[in-house]
Image (cartoon, rainbow, N blue to C red; front, side, top):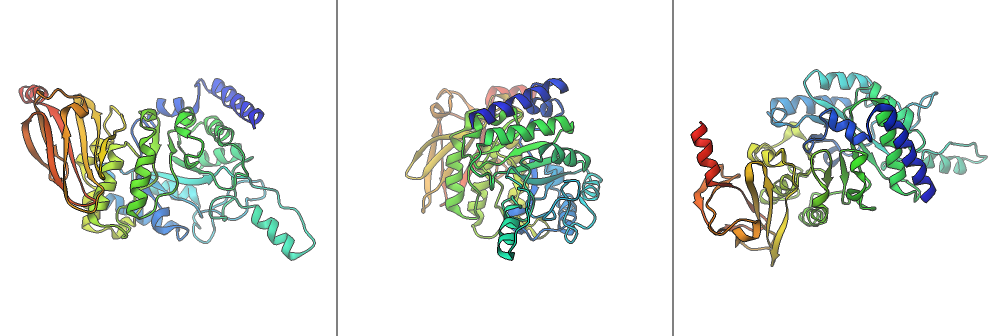
Length: 423
């Protein structure tokens, strides 16, 4: 596999030199892509393979009518199951004629006309050539081997990177999630580098989301290839999944920043298997970790409670803060945790997260988050939308319900005075 990776690296280098950029990530940043974590919607968590163009159009419209688009949810991403099982006669991907009869380019035009962006799904798996067999059973077996996305319904792109990247550019795709199923043990760096090079050559700034599930620690190598990389397995609409994935993603905090983001998978808020408090914690931690905020529920039928979580502008602003530093777990004892991170303007975001089964007080001391005990700060509660204190010193304690959290922004008092003087 070492020789294969060298080859792919050379491909990336040569293509980059031809386009005037060292790598695709640099090209994306130069075009304003990935400077903050992406926000939008993805079809998989709620619809799985039950997706069609009418749902995508209705979701785009719902993002606008609910006000979510105005808050920054711009990407409308189609996940797996959108294509025909076979490529066309010249080897191009083709939209499923039953579920996407108008084609992907027409759908992109619909989404773009509303000021939104369209995303799509592919897979870095092998798309083997089908050969004739004498018996039906043998033919059926080889037919299965020909389809290599995770649903076994869409052709994989390994070996077709150049034509597939060109097709995405022709369709005016804005976001590309590239999965890792049926890779036959081929190391991911070469496979993802090859697609990154092909996207660069295609010349369209497409947000490239590498989805290899964190198996080969992509946080340590994927930054030059795209704008985000999955650090974990797929999320589930379960409390245990949210906590496990948050901890796994936390390990890679230092690698995230403007242009490249750790991706702990999409949001489950609103899909119905967790409590309101658990969804609020889920959203808060994802925002603090600078994770992509990709809604995973049916936006058309989202409840007021769901919209109150994913539509919290103060929490979204933490996620989209231009400093771009991923918050991390500061301390944990008996499932009572403090997470925190720096924001622009010398502010600090703090989440007090109760992962235990009972209500309990949680305390954050100024020393834990890099402040002097004598430093006065204002404390803004992002879920209550109110100030807890305008001059707090030393520490902050709050009673937090089971599986719930408190989320605050601490702002130096001197900075508040300067802002007031300016106003």
